[in-house]
Image 1 (tube, one colour):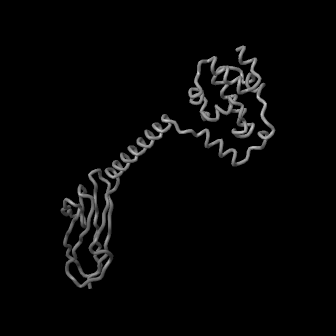
Image 2: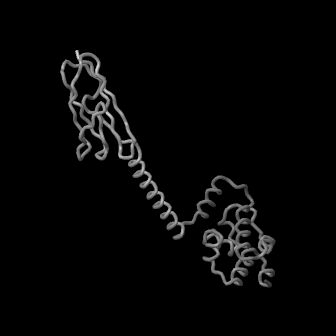
Image 3: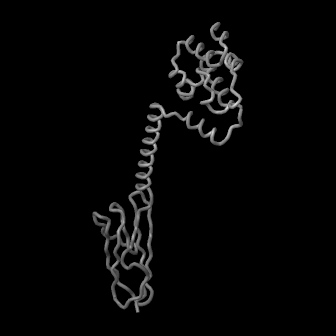
Length: 214
């Protein structure tokens, strides 16, 4: 530790400590999360290229902990220029954030796996909800409540192909595409037609049409 304690600047002390530990600048960057370029500026005592004094001190402390030395060995010989002793402005904070968010292959692979995991989870959630949720049911004819003089009305629509459709509790055939069709006799006055689709899991949905026969 003699080379470190005899150093006159924080940059020289940092370099001496790192070399004594046999650690490369890149390895120190990965261990501390500080950008490689900023570490180079620290070792060169080129503080004009770094953010405000508060952040430089934080860099030195993180380096000291990563190298297993007391932070005072670096901070006691840290002599920032007067220009660096400035308050942290929004632009400086943003510049520091951009530097510290260095994208490494490890971060890229981690983000990729997280994205893939989220996509797979969303896909399975969608599939399960489609299976166990209530089926879709669209009655296309008649499209709304109507008045008619006809003795019969055609009930038509579509649902999930694997669902069972009932028109006034009478099951009708569902085609391979989910289409269904039935003819219902009408009585004089108000006729209530209940169309119900039931999934294979027992979930159901119902649509009602009110038809008045004059």
